[in-house]
Length: 273
Length: 266
Image (cartoon, rainbow over all chains, first blue to last red; front, side, top):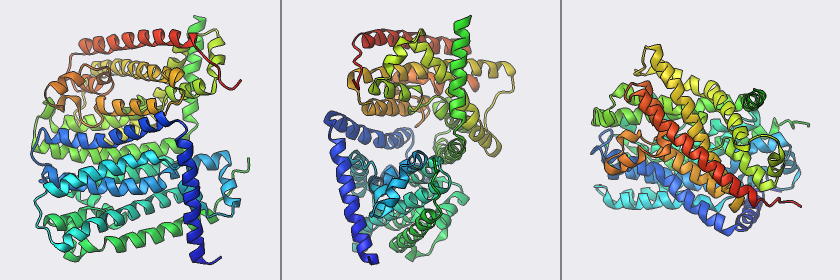
């Protein structure tokens, strides 16, 4: 089986498993609708928090409400896509503890596809929808000097951002293989990461921004490209072309995450219970 | 006296059960610290723009953030305490066994949840709080009496938190699937407890309403007691009134629920 067919196989398996979970979720239809709505409200809550803040002030860290909403919409939409695709990765620890992870290893299907699609939940669309609505409003409301390249940059940002967050999810899953019940560390980088990006970089300490640019390059999800769209200075004085390197950053992140996942899988020892 | 010993044993059990998840606890400490950092910076930017917002100065706003991180798991603000197990037992039918025990169902679960809360505070709450105290200017009292009053407020907060979640869990008798209820617990908990923003910084009538709801007893009231923003006895009365009302309502719903209990699984 070549590398290419492994990928095709993985995507196909992912689709089948995800489809199964969607049907399972639909068994309790009222509950599904409730959780979808709940998801919308829940993810919208931090935006309500931002609105509450702006009911008291005109700007935060020197950024206006539409500008912060742009950061928010970009961060939440791209995170939402990654979360929809791979957000169930945190059950990995539980699966290793109860031994059912071993079952996934012996199936003739890529393990990453099985883990990624595990407990696939369509209700997570709530976050994507909510993020897109805020993003749509922000794109209309911000005062930006729109050009073709800036318009094209928006979908590039969302997709690259989704890929960067996906890489964080996969790397987190690899980490869980080593630290079996420390799933919550992953939350600091996934949920913490998207929360960080909802606010302007000017709010945070220099070291935190540097860390989010060079160590875990979350800044390329929205801070840097959005600064270009809004004509604001880039965080940590990056050069002007930095706004366009998000896809490259995403590719590198995904490659590193895939490597971490392979190393993790190879060093996996079953609990043996 | 014998029954007091029993409930103490249940509480110790709750404490020890959570104490066995060591890596998870360490992970929680890390995550709460990261979130605390993000929140502290946003609050500082907000209070920079509006000094004295909600009657707090910057040091008080910072204190509020780290206290929130300390109490987040302690009070199971977004759920995940005793009510999760209770809902599970209702769904699987194991609740029938609990009902046959010669103990008070509500007190049994309260004791277990208080044990859990104590562990979560010592295990994952204190460290982020100390981290905040080391690296940011905080507004902490030096009088022992204030810390004493704060401890009472915390205990009452834990009871109110349990009473809300117990009520939510009982809904599972009618709905079976606990997912929707868990989400309601999460949303109301995070928003009305003041995890998103201190309740005294909520504007207008909206702010007046959220400050009298039971969720205010969980973070806002203990924070104000600690920072001397409210008179302790009035704060205790507010918390105790909600605790009694919600526990009583819980008993009422419980008796209605157990009359119609249907044990699943044959």
